Image (tube, rainbow, N blue to C red; front, top):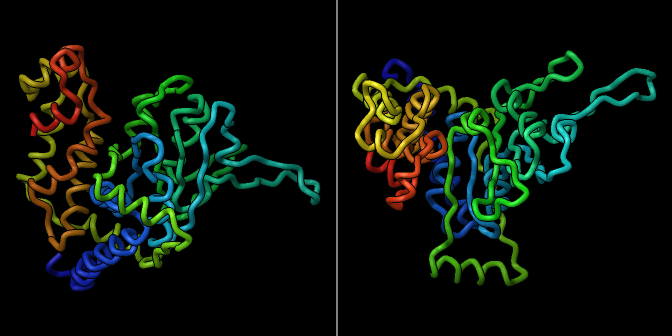
Length: 321
């Protein structure tokens, strides 16, 4: 990186853009600073995010606002039990030219909001898998490339589980982050009420564009990582796997299943992005810790001992840290 003046200039520019992005987003969204920060980390890491929170916490507005500030196209899909895969990826119709023509679905966008993703059957959930992993859609033997950059930001309601289809582990693992969207504080809720019960419309300005985001994603991956930081991230993931060499006593007691190698990869790329957004040219262990909760919380499966002791998944991860 020292021999790459253009890369250093881009990183300095990214840190400034990050501050400007947050300033614009905060014109519309009150509070939720950690959530905003984690979504931006996942986007600049070229990863997808799952937002978990009860209804009415402005998850949809937040995603829409972020896409506006980034200068990216945005589509929303409301997932329902009768939604079909073709409603997401598109379908072929017989056109006036007497030939089949592929009509693109809402997945052909740069930011896709998959609203209440656990309310649609597994067949439709699986339609997103190839799009998320391969950044393309296959239909009738032909590949259709998605616009770049491409992010899926999915929402999920953790309370009402009747009539839902829990995401399988294979699909959960496609998400870089599992982001918990909590209630606002008392003061923040007063500000929200004051801001949303008048005729004044708050508007966030566009700060970036697709070309600049792709450049930032590329330079972040070039950041050097010390051997100690990589080993810390890998050991942290290995410590979550029961009945293995590196498993901890906490893991043996409270976990049925641990994180796979994809978690180690996301810890490092997330740490790189966290460092870059904060003006650093190389991540340290604190950067790994900063992204550990959203990376690991949906990749571990706790057992009845954890429930009996009243431990949440975050409690267990914090003990491992």
